[in-house]
Length: 297
Ligand code: FE2
Image (cartoon, rainbow, N blue to C red):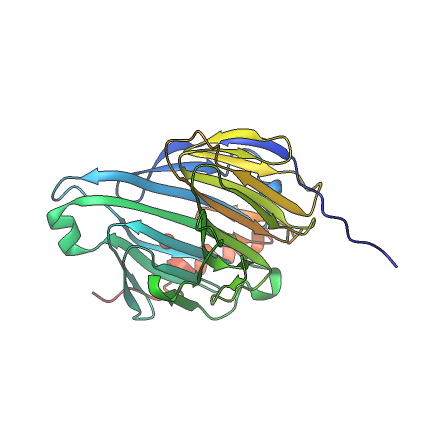
C-alpha cells in the first residue's frame, strides 16, 4: 500500500508583466510568452487588458483576425466586449462572463468594446488566456462555451475569508461547467486579509498564479508576489498554497491557472499554433484563400 503524502510546492520563479500594444492600439500587460514558455505548456499566452478608465470614444479592440490550433479564453472583469466571427456567431460579454472559444480548424473573429461602452467610456478590465490544443484536436470544428457570470460556480470557505469562481477544474467543492479538451484548472480566488488557501494540484500540472490586485505570499517558502506579477510554481509537490497577510489593507485577487503539459512540438506563427512548419504554411494559405471564412457585417 502506498500512502499519498501532501506536499506544498515551492516557487520556481516570479515574472513581471511587459506592457505591449495589441489589436487596434490597446495596452495589455503580458507576463508570458517571453523567450521560453515550456514551463507554461499547455498555455501559450496571458494578456491582462487594463484595468483602465477610458474616456468616451477612446476604447479600442481587435478587429477581424484569425486563429487556428488552440483556444482563446476571455474573462471580463469590467466593461463590455462584443464578439463576432466568420460562422455568423455574435455575442456580448459582460463583467464576470467567460467565453471559452475553441478555434480548432479556424475562425476569423473581431473582439471589440461594445458600441455603447465605446460611446460612454468607463472602466475596462479583462483577461485573455490562450490554451494550446493537443495534436488530435487542432483541426476540430470551432466551438464556443459562453458562460454568463451567474452560471460560473462560486464557492466560499465557511468563514467567508476565501471566495473562488471556478472557470475550469474544481475548488472548495465546486466544479466548473466549462469542458476542456485536456485537464485545465482556471480559478479566480479572492482572499481577505489573513486568509490562506491550500489547493490540491497534482504534480504533473504546470501551475502559475497571476495577481490581479493586492500582494500575497506564495508557495511553501511564502515568496511575495504583487499585482501584475506571475508566480510560477515548481512541480515539486501536490498542493499549492497562497496567503494574504493578516496586516494587508486589501483583499488579494488572483487567478490560479494550471494544466497538464501536452509535451508536443509547438510551431507558432502569430495567431496560428500548430505542430509542424508545414501545418503553419497550410494555415496561412487557408486564411489567405478564404478557407477560414469571412466576417459578414
Ligand atoms: Fe482573437
